[in-house]
Length: 144
Image (cartoon, rainbow, N blue to C red; front, side, top):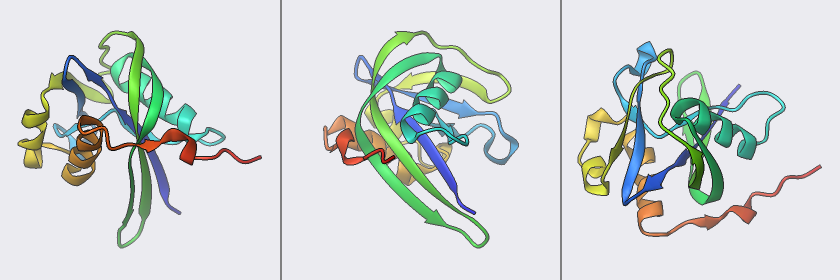
């Protein structure tokens, strides 16, 4: 069974927020605030929750920056990355999940390479926000 990953790109003063992972399988790698969707949670609710849990910021989701699908030998994941507007909050580190949180310029992120948890996903999502090449969030329909 696959996993659904949700998260968001946070931008402030022309810098982007990245979190440094504490999990053993990716310890020390930089990532956007993101995580697994919980049962009975929409991708919108999950993205907002994960962003808050990993960064301390409450956000509004404003667009779709990136959708990814990766198939591995014994698993697969689908990821939804949203552009955001910060509504409130301040940097807050949960040490069981996050080692550090920092703001980086676009150029700094584009040059991080292997320091990023998933270089393609992170750089393409941030590039979509930087260039305002986003999909309208309304493209994702919640059905009953």
